[in-house]
Image (tube, rainbow, N blue to C red; front, side, top):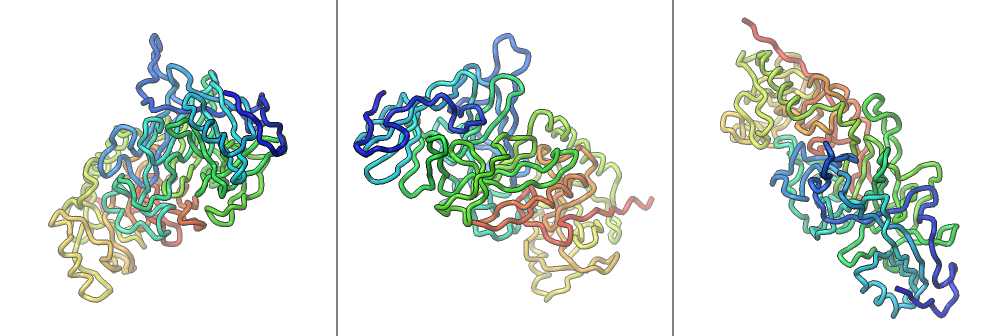
Length: 485
């Protein structure tokens, strides 16, 4: 397809072959399709090559409505049987009537930058045999590989705490929010098909017509080499860990990724038209522990090497059985406590261990010790463990009978999503105030990470349910009472 140049002179010339990528220092972007992970099995190969896995924070192993197809809490990206990548080829300066002609060609991938009512710049893309692309967004159209919807208590909401999520550990119903702030075509990840299988992230994804369209009011600009770049409405934020994610967990700095994969400082607000400053010494290359925020949901990228150092579901089940085999007891009622099965994430079991969050003493459920009006205590009776129902979020603070410290009193839940762990250590600590239990290293690492909320707020949150962390450290060491016999 060849388009004529616009009547007004714009730099670069009306048609220009693009040999380099949009991002001078990085390989070309690619285009994804609706392929599923099992499509990556190659005839004669022992195992498919895995690029990495994406895990949505706040769902603790699966969506509340269940993982179905491309709508799930976790997705592994595998090498495709055939590459589906594309790379920039030709750039055109066109008048508005020609824009529709260019965008109507569904066999041609393109990015359209609208500069004014009368002029646009269209960048055509051609096939790149060296890359695979995977697209992420809210749309359920076939070109989206990973359908992501808003997580309760995440960046797209009101910025408030995800109250009540500690009970079931699902963090959201997986359904599409009526006021979703996640883009239908939020971002794309490009993976090199040859070792070391580098993965890079770019803002925006191609739609069903194989186009990315940046309107007149979107933040966009010409780069120093005469090409175009831009930002999406609510932006795609990325934070790479400052050190190695599992050995030296420390948060990095949140940045914004452009359509061409360049790295920028954050805008004043999420959708401001003025871009942040270019950060030239950082890249869009994903590493183990990189976080991707889509303004409504936050995704964690884990590499195959990083995942090998985290517990599998089978190992988590073994840890749960070891905890129960120790026969922890309530220090007051002397009844034996037991963590429920990993599949039971919606109701409180009668043997469920509960914890006083300000001290870490573990008890069985009891309906006394309130330090507020009796009305709060009566509300807890109806949702207590004896009835099998979930405990209400507004039960009020209680006084620990062991040390007299006053604070939240919540049931404990084992973190079921192994990919969120930083190691396979014993589950000795719990996040405050939700009560999700995992290793000491995991609670310490996540308690340091500020996650985006709303348009410009950041707050540490439990990765298993999305609840904002509270208290001095955001977590507590659990103190179990062993059997007395």
